[in-house]
Image: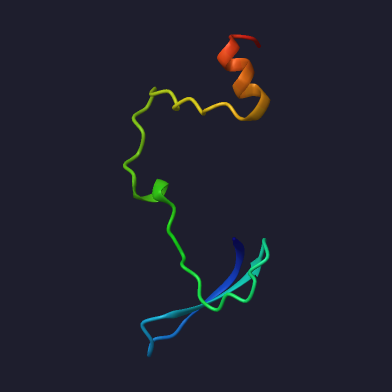
Amino acid sequence: MAKIDRIERRAESAFARIHAQPLALAGGARHVLVLKPLAEQLPPRPKGEPLPARPAKGKDKDKAREGRP
């Protein structure tokens, strides 16, 4: 995972050069796969429609199973 600093696009190339700061250890990786967030491909949510519930994590997940707050 990395934070994108800048993108250089060149007219003579089909590829762009992307400069990024790693947010995790890369361990000598030379190539990366850049994925566009899926949310940008989805149609807009209709007005008034509630957001989907997120699954509970860790201890909260155990409490949710037992019906405790």
